[in-house]
Figure (cartoon, rainbow, N blue to C red):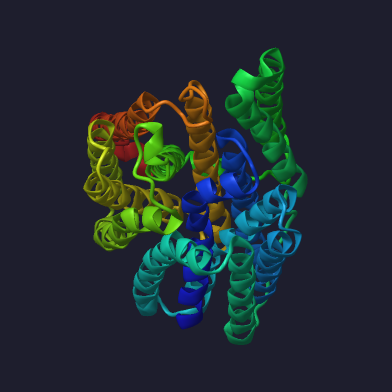
Amino acid sequence: MGVAAVLATVTNAVSFMFPPLLPLMQAQFGLDVSASAWIFTAATLGGGAGFVLLPRLADVLNDRTTALLSGTVLTVGALAPAMGNSYVTLLIGSALLGFGSSAQLLPLGFLRRHLPGDAISTAVSVLIMATGSGTVAGMVGGGLTVKFLSLQSFFFVLAAAVVATTVALVVVIPSSKPESSGKIGIPGTVWMLAWLTLILLALTQGLLWGDAALVLLLAGIVGGVAWALVQRRSSSAVFDVKVLKEPFVKPACFAAAMFGCVDAGFLLLVSYYTQTPTAAGYGLGVDALGTGLLMLPFALMMFVGGKAAERAVAKGRKGAVLVVGATVCAAGLGWLAVAHQEWWHYLVGAALVGAGSRVGYSGSFAAPQMVVPEHKAGMAAGMVGTLMAIGIAFGAALVTGLLTVATVPGTDVPEEYLFTVGYVITLGFSLLVLLVTLISRFRQRRNRSTTRTTTRITPRPDASVSSR
């Protein structure tokens, strides 16, 4: 449990370290908003691939081998920008770090496999606490390191932490046989990332590339439709479509994607606004560490929200958890749409968004786990995690494209009103979760009512026929 907690802490720190550092990276490498945001998007797309492949590898190979693989990828991902110190190596490293950070799902699988039933609830509590700790470390640690050292030194420190964690994992995780057999579906995963990247490029570069962006968008949509058709007939599909037919799984997966959009939109809007120099006519003029501290309530409330949601999910109230999470997120984003000019505005908004999104993720990840057998635990977690990553990438691309619509004359700084629009759009993702969840609950209740009615009116078999 202790080593699993360390893994969850390090991988979640990797997931949340990029947003506060983006304005710094933009200034250091002479980038615009769109180019710097692609550092975050590359990490997210890498995470999407990792969420598909790593849990599946844990099912097909074993937990120890998969932990070693993810640790190796994380190490290479940290060393690439540390040694290369360029925008290209930073993009490559971000994608590899995103892929390796998907190892945050591995503890859920190997603890479920190696611990007795009574210990699982304790393990889940430990992982939730570690997730909160990792979020704090990612948001504050990166800014703290670059304040006193440099961006290059930060990646060397990260590489050392990953190596230590990987060694501990390999030593502690018990040797085990594979839980299942079959193909992993790497071609399908690569194809999925390809059409997603085309769509995201079109969203972020639309104003700059003009008609070329429309061609990319069309190609991405066509590629996505073809991918879905092929996957339905594939023997090594990325996801098990049968799981989506189980009660409440589709709304939970949709909610995971929407909460990913919420988090990405929130993190980017806060990072760019708070680090905008006051000379632009707005902004707080803080550094990466200051942004991380302002978003600290987001990380802390993710921990509190996870603990609260855990008890509700254990009682089978997945729908209620999603409704509460979406409502709290909407309240936080509505607040920020109106009040984001002062530092304390962010403390309030960050707390609400952090609590709501964590509650929502708990419900989203729990729904598939409650309907799949143990040997498919990794696949189920990876399915939800991938949709969450897709949501993060989409939300980041949408907000990035929005912030390039208009700039302050003579600068590359977005116009202030775009941040208000961004918060309103992000709030819309929360409302979509509410709508889809409530519709799903209504349909389930109607189906149960129809089933009970049919059962009551079904005639009993004739006694003479039964005796014969």
